[in-house]
Length: 252
Image (cartoon, rainbow, N blue to C red; front, side, top):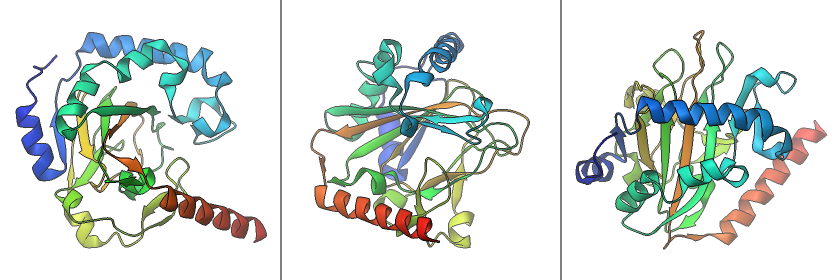
């Protein structure tokens, strides 16, 4: 486990919009999380609402790709999200009191795990100011073949890019003008189990599809700054847009 001195991390985070913390959790800690996660999938997932559970193939439980708000169904994961070193780190990087919002499970099943479109989390969050942080904890090795995380350095300082509807389950919005120049500016991180990536809500990021024979499991953490407030007008407009798109799709 690394030191709790996050000053160097904060420098990278403020400059680049992201930071990499290798070995944030030990192998033993990761093993404990994975054991609890297997128990969670077996016992809790059947009780969760459909909108919080996503599969690459809904007819195949072995293709589980995403779970939302798992902290609400497990005291273990509640403690991982709140009152933890993750929350402490969030407070340091946000320069604000951290408000825990979501703990997610992500996977890209072997060969069929789809790409995550380029996006900015802040587009989903709709905050004023957009003060939020996302963390990505590798539960196993991630590299170019199974969908490691890719960032655009400094993109958190360049405003919100236009987003539009995607066909990716669990990631409904993606940047519509993502270009070859953007691809050429990507910085990717190979990660081992226990490594942590953190990024600003405005940082552009994406992942490739999993073309390997390995899975790619991770946990995602979301914290808002206490000073950030939901933009209710933007949220209502977004919901209206989604409803219109769904209507148009059903009409065709």
